[in-house]
Length: 249
Image (cartoon, rainbow, N blue to C red; front, side):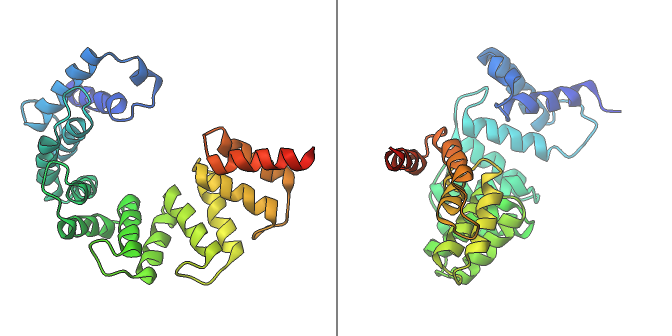
């Protein structure tokens, strides 16, 4: 049976880190500061939790320090927590540590070190790490440019449900960037990404239906996807709707 203090920590995580919930939206700054204090106590071993491994608590404190949730933003503290936990094999911390090195948050920018940590997270099949590494290989950022490896990594991330990787993979297949043009494959990945709410993929899927790219033309479906993307501010989709309205006059 879990201790009350452990449940409290889990409760803190639920609304502090995923601030999309209605509860989080109603939470005051004072509430967040209290829960940050709970997380910090757990991370420092000042609370008697049922689990001796405190890596999740330590990682979450790092997230709070990084994003300024319940405390002031402090990249250096966040980096220290991520470093401590990443060394223990925590995949989320390995990824965030890589991002810190990549962007110079809390530490001097070091692309080589960033790639090292991103590789560690990617070896654990963490989709965001796979996708970010793919981008590095595509652009030759910190590694030798290698589109074959980029496509390979995008595929791995896409198969693990990474929406942006799915969209980029669709674009590669449509344009022949690193792969042979395959419109059906492009449509497949655009659809996968759009179904997860990626606004660029929603527009691309609409365009596929409008122009018959990898799928039979269907203006009704095209306009529906254009509208979904336009409602999110996707400018190409907004322009596509306007253009269609002009043609229909």
